[in-house]
Image (cartoon, rainbow, N blue to C red; front, side, top):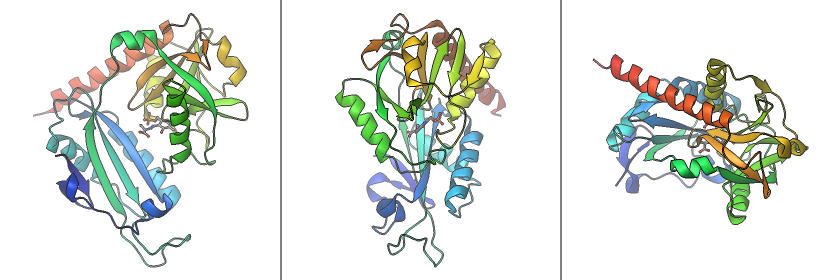
Length: 291
Ligand code: PDD
């Protein structure tokens, strides 16, 4: 039985209960984060906490994130995941429980804080080398997807469309632009340059995206942050996604057409290896810092 964290206490999952008046349940009025741990060491926890603070501020949910990173670490330990190659924590904060109104509660309410930990795994190397497939789907989300809200119905519908089409993810398209995946950022490689959508209200500023930008810089791979038109996809040398639970994930086919030579390309490969080296360095630093 897994242990979860709810409103200040670690409890068995079966005992964790949330009010039916929770505004997350009724209205999707909340934010979340997903952070990965490698053998119990969190990757970029400070950046996840900073993004969480921005999301909370955007929704005007009054919650101090101070100390919550320690809770997440403890959750990983309590679930026996300190030695897991890869694990993650999911943290959700909603405005809290109050009689249903479209406007915010007029009386102060305590936010609801819920977190769980789970293990996850990278796909086998041969599957990764073969690459993954995607379809394009209209981006039906609201115009503030830079805020990491729990309102994920359009993402879920697009992902479901992809699974029912027999592929691995959907690329969300708005006004002719390939914006991002359903739960990952999206990149193309054109003439040796790695291209990804600039930070704006139209994408989530992925933590993995940020790390991969730094890895590209270290490796001397030129980067362009600009919109990728859907018509460009067929001319890309490589395509890939980045995200906490996907790391760097090659995409070799879109809407049934092969990209490049139809295999995972060299830039995607180099960035993925660079990302994994970064993880290894981070783990070494954490081990060295342990008394
Ligand atoms: N998804 N874009 C969207 C729409 C996302 O939902 C995510 C993350 C990303 C990548 O962000 P990051 O690198 O910080 O994980 C981009 C999380 C993992 C999820 O919903 O489970």
